[in-house]
Image 1 (cartoon, rainbow, N blue to C red):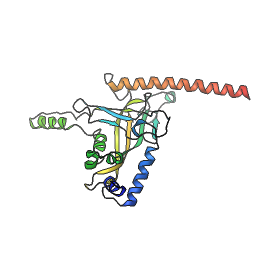
Image 2: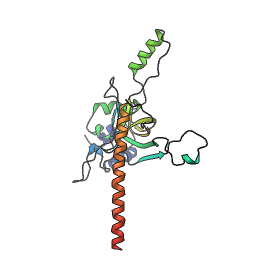
Image 3: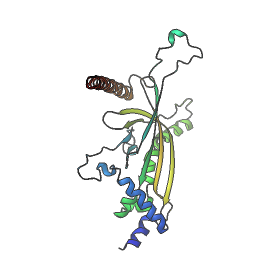
Length: 254
C-alpha cells in the first residue's frame, strides 16, 4: 500500500495537511519516551506507565486506566484543612485540623495512530472511544447497580442509598499510590474517522486525594493513604539530611 492510501486509512479522509500535522503530534509523543513504557532512545531506562485503577467486583476490567502516554506534567495543589470556624483562637494558630487537602490535575493523551498503522479493527471502527469510555466509567455507576435500585424502587422500597462508586487509586510510580476521587473530566476530541469516532483526544483529569479524614478505618484506601504518608515522611527525612550535608560541604569548601 502506498503512502497516500495509508494516510487515508489513518486519518479517515482528513485533508493531507491535517494528516501531516497529526503525524507530527504523534511523533512528538513518541519522543517523550513513554510509548509502550520504553524510551525511544537506545540505552534509556524503561519508563513505568501511570494508571488510575478502580476496584469494581462487577466490572474488574472496565475501570482500569493505564496511560498510553504519561502526562507531560502533573499539577498538585495542597492546602491546610480548615477547622470550620470563622474565628479561631490564637492558641489554635498552629493546630492541624486533619490531613491537608490535595488536588491533582493532569492531561492524558490518547491516540489511535499506531493501532491504525497496524490495521487494528477496533481502532479502525471506534477509534479511541474504548479508552475514553474507561476514563468516563470512573464517574459512572455500573448499570447493574442502577437497574437493581430501579427494581427496588418499583417494588416499593422506601429508602435506597445512592449508588457507591468503586474506590479509585492513582498509581504514579511505586512511591505514590493514593486513593482519589475523580472530580472532573474535560474531554477534547481532536480528529475523527469517517464514522465520526475520535481517533485522537486529550482528557483533563482533576482528582482529590482521599485521606484518613475522608475514609473509614475499614476502607482499603485508609491504609493506602497512611502508607503514602509514611513514605512521604521517609522521603522528607532523606531530603532534610541531604540538604544539611550539602550545606556543610559548601561551608567547608568555602
